[in-house]
Length: 374
Image 1 (cartoon, one colour):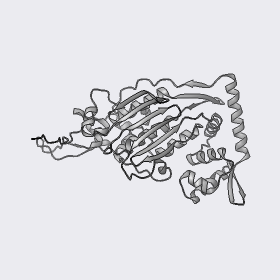
Image 2: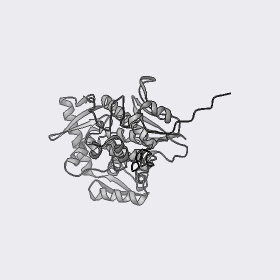
Image 3: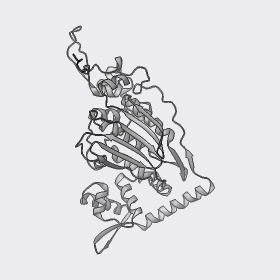
């Protein structure tokens, strides 16, 4: 799709409609055709309707599919738009609106310009993908994107007993509720193909000096993912960029641990395990790797072993903060993100009035109507 650029599977671009559906796994071979003995009509699955169907077909066969983009100022919704669009077009629209509203700051490391957004686009992209591909389409409710002054909140309807919040997926294997939809989003380049989108969302927020997303399960049928709107820590963003420039990038667990140690002077292994969503032995292994990298040191008190940032890390962070202050003194680094340009045509993001699947979506059985009275 056009919002995805080079991330998309280039092998999909030249496929015809039904070939594209088959490649994404949403079309299966059907029974032999009566008109041609050696041919068969493909059977399109409901996922094909969600990906490529016309809005009116989606509303008829999948009435619970709905998404909303709301912009809140205090208690007033200044934008309140609802969509019943197919998922590829819907994801592209939400990403375009995100880009148009997001802002960024620019800092410098040597000759490198480091762009620090108000919210990570990668994090937003992964959380939207998670909401659209993990929701239960038989459960009433809409996917809500609420952009308030202090947060972006993505609310996702789920079935009762659907399990814990998405943060539980940090350390475990990917388990999408709708594997066909999740794989289609990855092949279209909308989400990371590793399947660890939540982990990537956490890492990309932290590497920009932003607050990690947090997750809640406030009701039996609702999961909420929140990106807090807090000022970016530009010194830490510069520190991370410098390490990446020198070929020593920090992984998601490293970023979580170092961020935590900047907020509290010491960390115990049990606290690190809770933070990372792993057991104590795995947390200890992460901390030992940071020890060998010269980023943490071991201390102790009457309650046992503790972990601290090294003096060198503190010096590096102070130096980064001094550079940021110097840049701010000569000119404010904040610049607005430009509005997203109109997306070019793409086989994965067709324009109205038609969609990739001819005839307005899969030929599913008609939904039964209530019998007439009398």
